[in-house]
Every structure is written in structure tokens, then in C-alpha cells.
Image (cartoon, rainbow, N blue to C red; front, top):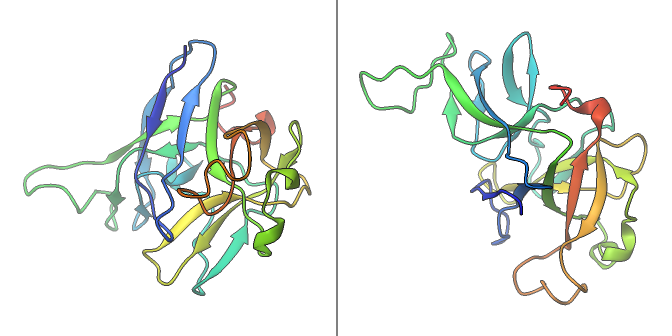
Length: 199
């Protein structure tokens, strides 16, 4: 038995938002975290924590229709479970008048948490399940579509360092999910060296 969540994040060409789940009957660990001053967090963002405040772990590419990888050694804290637009004092500006929100809900990456991300290769014909090997670690990235509001996280084919380990495939074949996913989704675990919570 596992606990699983689906969340709405940036969407590119109708891709189904990824999900995450825990293994072995464990519950997904959640916490409330302060947000960096003037930072914008979206529901489903992969976030990092520094000096007690969270922000997006990797930035959205500045150019449309491009992707950028993490670099292979990006420490990550968890997944944001709500939208949060912080003002210069770290207070959310998207809440109702008279309500002061200073923390964002986060699902923490731990040893039991698996994240489902689409695999991506700039050469689409190379983005098949065969491009990823179970037990191998890969860099994750963000792809920007036609605008800054059209984006998604993905797992790349670059194995230099790599924050996420491929644990299991999502479908039985490459054709099983093509009506919903443009690229093959796979289940990943964040490597302990890059889990900021250390769980």
C-alpha cells in the first residue's frame, strides 16, 4: 500500500501533471516552509531550501521551447503543494484580504518517496524507455514551452552525477501512454546525497 498525490503544475502540450507516491506503506512527509522574499512558487514545483527558506530548485529557461538541466548536483528539499507569490517580506500576496500566509506546504523527499517525471531528449525519437536504465542516476530539468506559463519538469538522459535514480517504469511499453504523454514517464527516487532533509 502506498500514499499517492497528483498535483497541477505547469502544463506543456497537454501533458498530464506528474505525481508522487510513497512506498512500503509509509506516509508522505509534509511540512510548512517559509518562502524566500519575492520568490514565486507554483504548486508542483521542485524546491530547495537555503537559510530556512525555499525557492525553485532550478530556474525556468529564459527562452521559449527550450529545456535546461539541473547540472547533476542540485540539492532538493521537496515538492511545493500550493502556489505562493512572496512579497519583499516573504508574505504570500495571493491570499484573501486580511489573511496573512507566511509558509508554503511542502512534501519532503525521503527514501520512500517516488516521483513520476516524463523522460525527455531533444531528439524525440531517442526519448524511449530504452534511453533510461533502472538503477542509474540522471539529471532532472525544466522545459519551457511557448511561454513562461507553459512548462514542465522532466528527467534527462545525462548521467553526469545525477540527483534522481530511475527506480521503475510507468507503463509496459512505449506505446501504452502515447495518447496521454508525449515522452515516457518513469518513477524516480532522489538520491540521499541530494535530499536536503536527510531523511
